[in-house]
Length: 102
Image 1 (cartoon, one colour):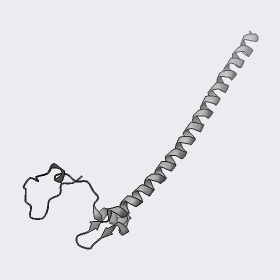
Image 2 (image 1 turned 30 degrees about the vertical axis):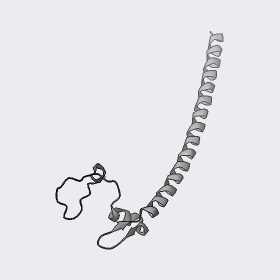
Image 3 (image 1 turned 45 degrees about the vertical axis):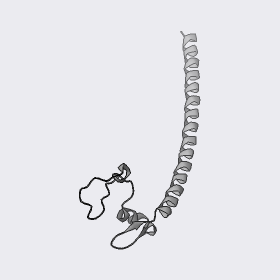
Image 4 (image 1 turned 90 degrees about the horizontal axis):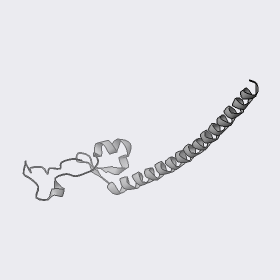
């Protein structure tokens, strides 16, 4: 978020509340990662439509990765439950074996 002030506007209060606080990206920072989304030399401007497309694609890729990780976690949880069940069965077997030897 940033406070936008037009050049020469001084410290006067904006009429509309939405004019007080705006959200966006710094063109200089975006230019390092995605120069195609920035135009201009001195006063740079963002091409938000290009940036939105790239961000949407990145979001889809992240969601696919999360789905993969979720599947891996569920599989690991199933394996842990199976191992705990086996451990319990082995303990029961060992207890009955020890009880028979006393």
